[in-house]
Image (cartoon, rainbow, N blue to C red; front, side, top):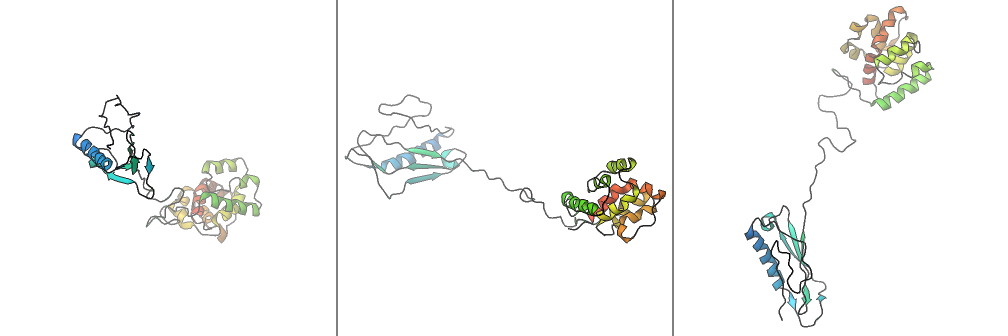
Length: 255
């Protein structure tokens, strides 16, 4: 007994007699030699199938499937492919389907060099936080501002001053609150004392030119816990540099 396998040329849509369907598999046809090599491989596998007279189609158990693996060079496609042909016994007049399963390539995206999303990379060598020349804060604004507000509340600062108790406040907001009388210069001292957490941040203030912007009488607000002189009208101008002072105090925060 002989089994019959029909090869349908590419582009032909007419099914031969006895063929119910055409498997949806095509090859680009750019290289006839590779095309023929592929089908010679299929023919080789089909020739090894066992044909019997039983009239039943049975799958032999415990026998592995035949896997023919190829690469781009063999199949003229952009990825490797595997041809899977089950070992079966085929009765006369029965056409056994040969399944050809192309494997698409898996594209792997490398993680970003700076690490997983949401995780801040470690500071680069020489880019240490809290030191000159940038005095970059070591603690996030959210965490540091929460601690600052709690201190302002403990000191019973007016509500107008408590609204300023955050490290991302702008100089314009500070100036406006002082001009409206919501937070006067006499309340700025305990406010900055909370912001400094008892640290002397005079070096940062010098880098930001506090004295040049306001006057030498304002530098004491960069180290408020060391004691402040009697405040007077000469200190009103210090309100113009509270934003810079806050930046310096933020750079000194350690929690």
